[in-house]
Image (cartoon, rainbow, N blue to C red; front, side, top):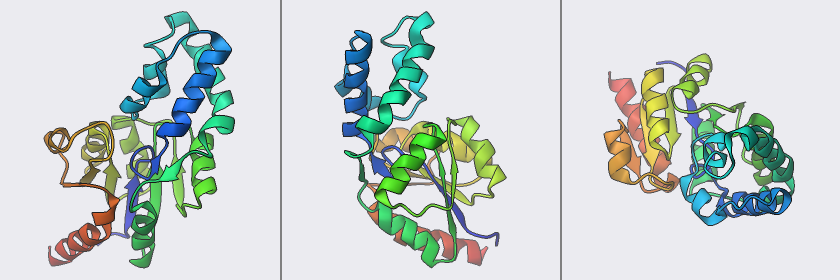
Length: 207
């Protein structure tokens, strides 16, 4: 059995970043004068930032909007963010079983690191600015044995990496969509992850 390395998505899997991201979008609107519906935007977390900003900015302004948003982000988005239910215990469960924790997120690494450090989430590796199949590169590189996420694209990433995808129905994608996207298991939230991890480890030992 290979060493245990559990990959986790970040937004709406390990952290509830909606209040802070909404605040950052409102600050972006104040700076640029371009109205962004922050409340709507935070219902769609998962895809890369450019995808959301392309809804509000003309194509020639998207890159400058990305830069402005990322400049504003540390001041507005970090402090309001909280761990998702069961997140701390999920990370501890991996470490208690001799494993390591990898975060693979579409958020750029330096901003993801601010969240992890602020909340004291003890992850061992971090890979940022990746989405869907792109996440599979980091999952393979780090030898991930499973990937946990809240988005159908996370299940696509797990499948592309050839590992089980464990879904949590805490983000924008309902349980049925996560199952249809290939989730090996769908949990209500990370509170059920330690027991699910034990079941998966037992099955792996039996094979």
